Amino acid sequence: SAHGGWVGGAMGGEIIVFNPATGERKSVVKRDVDVRDVELMPDGTVATPVEGRIRLYRISDGADVTPQEPGLPVPGERMQYLGKHWFGSSWHGTIRRFNESGDADPGVVLGGASGSFIGHLEANVEVSNPRGLAAVRDNMIAICGIGGVVQLAEWQPAQLRYELVRRIGSVPNANGIGLDRDGNIWWRGGSWRWADHCGQPLRATIETEGGGAGPAAMLGGDIVVAPGMRHGNVVLVNGPADTELRVSAVKAELKQWPTPVAGFAIVQEKKNRVGLAVDATGAGYSLRLNRDGAPGGDPERIALKSAEPLKTLTSLGSADDGQRLFAGADGAVVVFALSGDQWKETGRWSKWGDGDADRFGSSVTITADGDRLWVSDTDRHRVLVFNVAPPQPTLIATFGQIDRAGDDMAHLNTPATIAASGQRCVVFDSANQRLVKLSLSGSSLAAVRNNRP
Image (cartoon, rainbow, N blue to C red; front, top):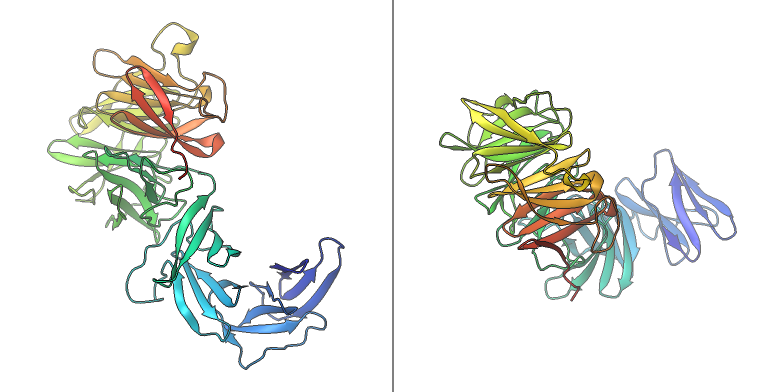
């Protein structure tokens, strides 16, 4: 916390203030327990929570100057005083606001942690457990989420709550991306519409462990299905990409569940839609899926039968309505077909011509849609689109400058996770920490940029 040129902090049980301009340091008070929150007040005192109540100490001599006993109630973690209100944070993107007397004013103003109220408020996974707030102007605050992305929230007086109006930050990771036929993009734990600009806060978010759900696949072109973890249990995140997805528990003991899941695809086995979740060697589980993408039966152990052992599988994709399975692994595309009750390799390829440009680098990530295979050629900084209808793959289009990384709208830098639907594609441009939207027209593959309103 900072005020008037001084910065307050805690080292163990000692509250200190220091002046970064002069290097002067003062010890305010020492306590027997660790101090987690420190707030410098406009009147020159320092506030900290003690046993659920706010205590005020005079900086000059550490004297307790709490104006009333036993002190004001603490509104939540990382308590802060902004304007004439106390703010506190907790999980599920919850922010509470109390007035100077310690009364709820009105209480929960964003998100909604369990037990805070009766009902449901939309939360945002990127705000999950806010790290800190800052006053921007009278009706707006800035919120830093646990992942380092900042959101601007504007006060809505009629609803007595804040609304997220601007996202400021990168896309630091992308375990999984989903893209439906309408262009709705699902990433990590929420969605964007195709026309959204880069400052749009994530819509309809849900929370899972470990930085979001794993690789995503689309069921019927509209339903996102992605494996993940929640409360230590294996779950499937499932539902339409433009809504708040469900988190459906896999009710079985899975001692060898792949951690992490390297590839996930939806295939057709006999009359059932089945999700395959595998690790980097191609071993994992198959799960029968219901029509809504929820688990529909007991998982079964599987191992993709490749002609030679897979060292680093990065992704799975299915084509021909789930009849063929593709894997991105070891710098090649590996093709599998169902033989009996096993998926067995029928071929692999890492080049499609005789020129240097007609080969992949050492790592590729793939996705499939219809007869098209979309490939992130990671080390060569490009995305390629192939027609994989038999008898052999044919290159349709490329995006990016081969072997030349960049950060403008004509270049990529280490592209990785990728999702596609129809003529559209979304790729995680990992070294630039961004998602890039691409549109295919004939043999032209171009980046799509939506300007801020």
